Image 1 (cartoon, rainbow, N blue to C red):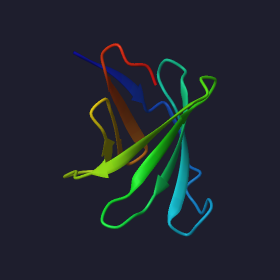
Image 2: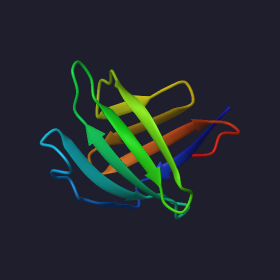
Image 3: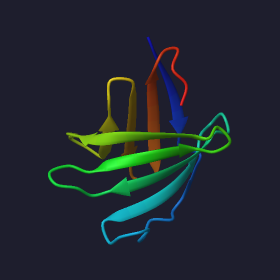
Image 4: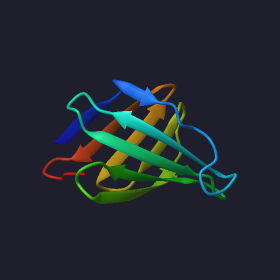
Length: 97
């Protein structure tokens, strides 16, 4: 069973250069109030995203995976999928960000 956390309420567009020309950053606020900062990095052949959960002191790094639509980042425990101004965070049951 998977637990889904919809992170689509407020996307504060902060896309732009962070520490290099190949990085962008965005802030999300989930329906339950969780604040997530996403640092997107381009790479060859695929990129990655670093998710930082406000107030929890936890950072998760996810590799980019193939997606037919939007940007998708996943490992065996968590998936972060963005499309337009919305994002969806899905994690394995019993796992917290």
